[in-house]
Length: 272
Length: 346
Image (cartoon, rainbow over all chains, first blue to last red; front, top):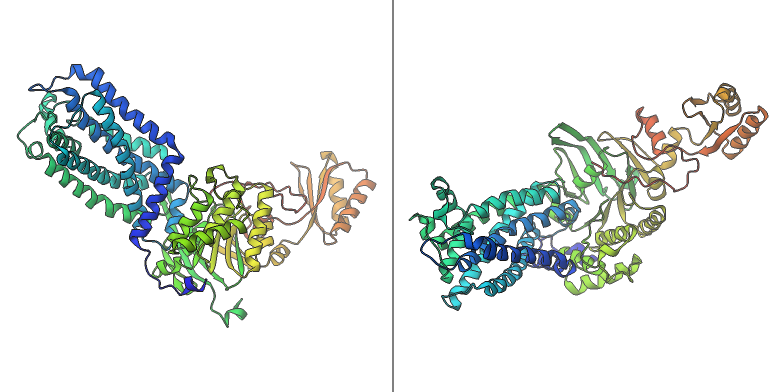
């Protein structure tokens, strides 16, 4: 008892606190396996729907295998939904009073949020692996070697990490898990469909092309196609179309730079 | 209270705390200049209905919320400027049982211990100790979602104790619990009190405040409106009273005369419920006298009993308005079967 009273009043260690929170979030996955199972089923369903139902109706300019074109889009879409996963987890912790408990502890102020985003990246990596396996099954291949394959995986996770910070902020803004779900889906569905994830950009009406062009989902999708040698029909000779990797890095940095401080500020001030 | 305060400084000092919540429909003044002093080693109960400002007070003192004005210090630390230092020496157990449902009891305690900056082996040992102490050893390795409401509350309280806090906040520790779990919780809290913890608890139940606290502070509309022991508060409303429900409304008039004569005070009548209430200075003897007199007068009764003052009575006397809580006011015996009024407190 005395040791605790006499301990120097330092801040909690950000690293070890974040690890504890990450551990806590990851423990949840095997304890509620339904969550991961349905997240995976949902993504696999998208693969099958687009590969077998829509695929035939969507011609690629300049030819190319639609399924090879599709898979990076599916990865991008799934990872964009990382924001929803994070938002729902955040809102759930708020509603159950756990955020209050954590805020009353002498721990690092940012650790709760860092732990949340890091564990969601690990979770998303698991889903990505399963998706890649189902992609391989429908004929998707990587053509540019191991180095560029892992570069693509890394970029995908970076993007997911940035999206998680959006989710952290969003999750604290809304009152219930149901609302979090609604808001996240309402925001992310147009984000993924108004992109080159499922259709080649030239097939969009002219006025919509710049929007889709600058869409972060288009950036990550284009980057993956470029890294892995999958078909990547350019819409325009615009900057984002020609530099999808740089664009992904920029978007990632912008998202983290905006939403991490916003999230931490909201977490400190939250009064629910 | 200042007699003890002469030697050791008070554990809690709050002065003029104000908190206003803004919402779409306007402003809610949750705290309106609340002052509070709690001495180290004592138990203070904040007693009041939903929305009185109890939870807001606890949240400010536990560093979760900043006051809009006023200042407060807990164990010598300013709740705003020294928040991080303060968090090391307090424990908070809220009304929602804020533990992780997907972790086991043991994992929850270990995690909270780590976040109190206790090293892993010590935290693990402490978790085992607390599970033992709170009668959760058998359930310690089961996920919390399999726990009953009472077990969750005990785990929540254990989580608050993991860092050996010098001061403990308990926000409505028994709200929503069934009577048996409530008594179990009381025993746990009493044990903490015997060990000399300083405790600030909030409750909607006078019985609970009476059972656990040295001092009760009655909160209404964001202010402390009375402070004293349970007996002192009850005496402000005149102690026990006799309550009679007359069977035939036509006999209410006669019954009123009989009861008033018997109790030597004007009885109050509620015609709608055919209920008469009168002070019973003589306790049980008085009850017997009233029953005998009513029987002699040939008045049929549906119900009769001695009633101890409830929070509602205290409130009615102190504020002139009812406490507006869900608890029915027909507790003829003043035992602990307070109905579980689940609900959030602002």
